[in-house]
Image (tube, rainbow, N blue to C red; front, side, top):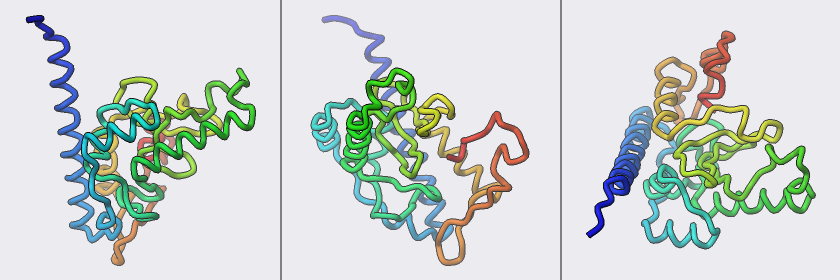
Length: 210
């Protein structure tokens, strides 16, 4: 029998990561429920591992472990719920994969995919959005790194901060603790950009609430 301690350790770390992601997301969702947030009630049921495998295979992608844990926790939200963060929509996995493929195909159709000067900023099918908006937070499935990064049309993935899901959720708690985000009496998001980290000029923390 072949001893594979490295592989066993890696599998253990991946399992721990998935468990931690689920834990911090559920803690966040419970905090929002306690504050009366309406959107969190529109989270969809999570996907099974087999369902995630089938969808990933259909789009010929391998999702990082953080991404698998997220969509196993909840398969996105009902349209426009903004359940997890202001101005951000959490798509079902199929929608996220389809969005990535469509944006990548658009780049090909426009001739941008063959332009060497645009190589660093074009949208690729491996950029699967966890939270969507004009500039989505994406998992880059070209690498196994369990981090999300904001994609922008002028900077690609290079100009923004990459964070794990756990790190990002910690900043979300910071936003509520410091008044950058709040939940109104009618259960919707309110935002105070003057309280954002970096609002007073410290660019070392820019984009952490993106």
